[in-house]
Image 1 (cartoon, one colour):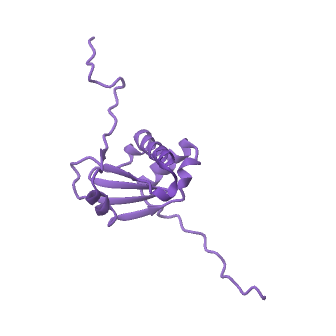
Image 2: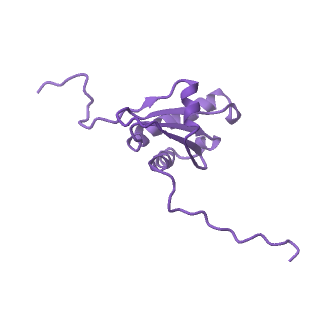
Image 3: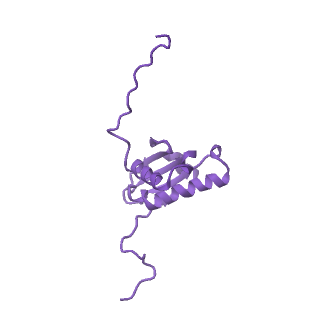
Length: 139
């Protein structure tokens, strides 16, 4: 049996995810749905193009550290998407992941699971626990 060198070693092809590269693409996604989390913000836009692959972009602002730390955040998120979250991304959707500084402190496996869960959908059914009304301090 001869092997095709262009073929991946495993028989399961991984889903391909495109990249958002230009500023107008990133700005367009801002008009979509926002899914907030403690470690990152996920912005999702349905492009109404089911035959095109999903695209993803990463944003890390300068207030979150120097260039070395920002690049490390970006690399961690990119790898988490590659390993876990690419399977959950829907074709024809654009995703922008806005990192927070906490990305550096979270264990990688937990980060990847959080990202996959957030991409699969908003936290429907989960309600924030209602706090009792704040009373007067004098009581």
